[in-house]
Length: 216
Image (cartoon, rainbow, N blue to C red):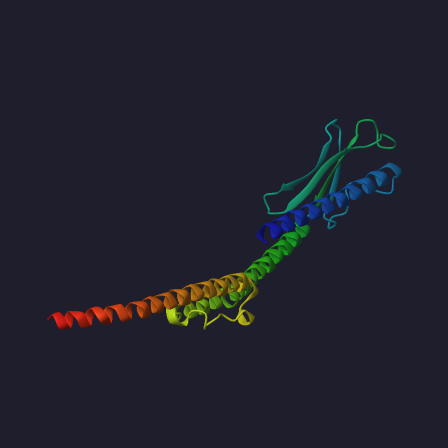
């Protein structure tokens, strides 16, 4: 279960990052198109959470996340632009997107998911403990008490009832009942043998005892 939740965390984080990157790429494409046809001018109005600037450089940088000193998180990329209407020198557009709110929201969602996972694990552990206690430990204790009450003379008379036993203990109960039957049969044969020997020896011993008394 822990491994499953860990996998879920990783997949969820991957989806969030992929979605954030896709939105950033769409923003960059829209700004690039607007700059080429003149619908967008720089600098961008403040308050949008997006900053754009043209650079005279050949360096193109894929989108990457950067944290600023004021605690904000930015997604920054540099994209090469076609030179129409922008001049040959201004060829790279740098876009800085403020993703602080998105990152905080995703972290909050992940923390909520972790909390739910923790509660679920605790609940499952408590439920599993209850199931083990009622389905295994208590039947084993009852089974032990029944075994302690068995005596040689009562073998075969106190057969364990498999109906009231959990399914996990049924093979053990059935095997024990069969063993008890075999032991009871062996014990009865031994008792019959001892009784027969005692009966056969009783008459000779009586005769010998009587002769011994006469000799005395």
